[in-house]
Amino acid sequence: EDKVVQSPLSLVVHEGDTVTLNCSYEVTNFRSLLWYKQEKKAPTFLFMLTSSGIEKKSGRLSSILDKKELFSILNITATQTGDSAVYLCAVFPSSNTGKLIFGQGTTLQVKP
Amino acid sequence: GAVVSQHPSRVICKSGTSVKIECRSLDFQATTMFWYRQFPKQSLMLMATSNEGSKATYEQGVEKDKFLINHASLTLSTLTVTSAHPEDSSFYICSATRQFGSYEQYFGPGTRLTVT
Image (cartoon, rainbow over all chains, first blue to last red; front, top):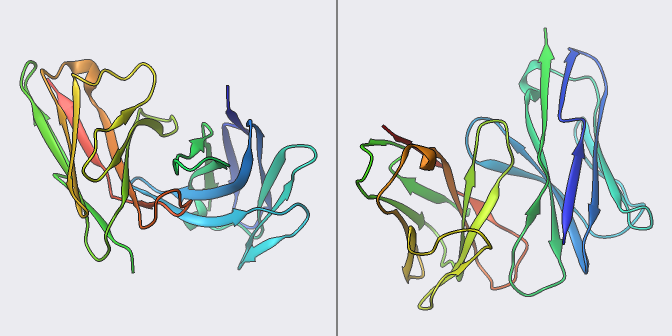
């Protein structure tokens, strides 16, 4: 059964800290891994990773994929209170259905 | 852009009644729409995949007679929760893709259903 596992499930940090969120996966046929940020409503897209070792970066957020070890990390540097959210990792298998398999999410709270 | 709307955003209904939730792609044609439910502090659980003009494909464990999905046009899918019970209370989110099999899912803002 395809599975996506995130850790930690929750995290509390102070502004300015750097955090690393983890996502490991087991899927029969892997195509891509996606990261989303969810703040109370719908998830918003952050990154899509397809190739190993290539870092994707957007401002203070960055992410990288390791297809050999089957995991990805999402880094947030110099955290701000606005980074408080649930971060979801999802895997897009190599099928033609378009289905995403989501992990449980990591709830990040950034304190002032 | 790629905007997906849901209506209503919040609904409270009595046990035994049915509730319809609409999901619309506002500025693109959605070949596929997905329906998820999300319990507090948990991740999105896929309920069903809906392609325009065909029957929805339900995930294992999701009762198709209870959660009726209709995808009548390329911009509208509806989820009807029939004979709702308190355990159906949840956050329901839809998403839509422009192309069949695409990873790019555009999410709606969600509908908070409370069954009393």
